[in-house]
Amino acid sequence: MTSANPSIAIVGAGMGGMAVAATLLQAGFDVRVYEQASHFGRIGAGIQMLPNSMKVLRGIGVEKRLREVAFAPYSHLNRVWDTGEVKRELPMPEDLYGAPFLCMHRADLHDALASAVPMERIELNKKLVGLDQDGGPVTLRFADGSTATADAVIGADGVHSVVRSLIVGPDKPIHRGRIAYRAVFDASLMPKAITPSRTKWWGPDRHIVIYYTRADRSELYFVTSVPEAADWVTPESWSAKGDVRELRAAYEGFHEEVRMVLEACPDCHKWAILERDPLPSWSSGRVVLLGDACHPMTPYMAQGAATSIEDAAVLARCLAEARGGSVEGAFRRYEAHRKPRTSRIQAISSANTWMSGGNDDTSWLYGYDAWNAPLDEPAAGAILPQAAA
Image 1: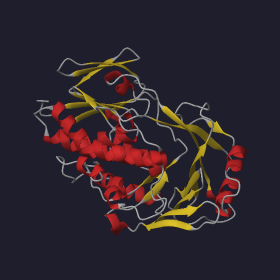
Image 2: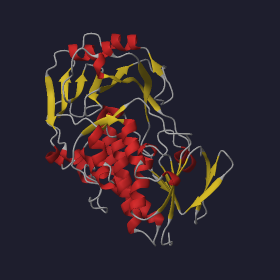
Image 3: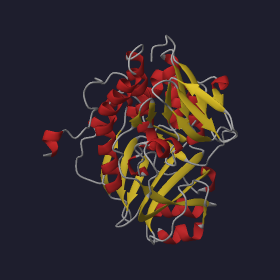
Image 4: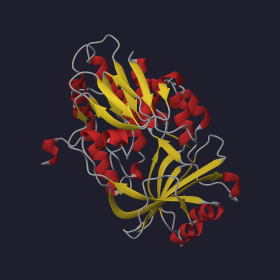
């Protein structure tokens, strides 16, 4: 990476792809994003941005925009499924971890990130089919027959990552017999307001998370996890329709607030919650993975997009400090710092135990600052070898 203005190709224009495009542009890199979709759509889902990812978004310059539209919950609230008893509550004032906790529509977050990346830097209808590298610039080949070259490539193309399959080989998702329902709908359909927190209702073998997605509390989101026969599998798609009557039946006996939300819900989506084993390596030569492409997670800690956004800041820092030196070394440094943290989050999220009770330390997760964390040490929350022994 000897050029004064190295070129970086980013495959995928999701949350992680747009975040790393924004951080690299700030660092002075020549960035181009390649996205297989023909346009950016408004997918009906909510998303939580906790202080660890909000710090990155602040550095990108989109915090003010998000504050204007997003809902700021009073707390991270966990309640018993039927009685409503509080299992654990963590009030989330901004001064607790140095940044706000915001809940929003995914499209509002994506729009904010896209505002930090000029449209002329993004190419749509570019489905990646091949990568060629021989120690120099990388050539990207697309389904439309076109090609592009770059000094380095970042695969931010999600759980179905083509980049991952090209550099690591194909892998199979793991289905542990869990499915999720989700919906975004008009809060005026409910007879009354819900608790002004982001609330997770814990049942014996299922849960549901509910929160507002707009500052004016006009829109509501929920997402669930329910056991289902292991032979029921859909692609990891957010567009498969679900049956709202099945959903309501699955939460029979839950607290009246949950029942009120589900009775008001007009329709829903349903998909299988699939997992993948951690990868042995995140990079090959001048190609590296980011976010769901290298550490896909269950949604149980609300850290999938958040860790992708953390990755973006750290990867930009590593590449900026390596300017004129080894891009491969920058990728190894990025992985060494990030992988222990994301592996721990993956494991806890898979177990679905986060804040279910007790007094879990939350500072290692929410207090992490990707802009200022020491790059030559494992990121906050890493399970160090001596601690794991």
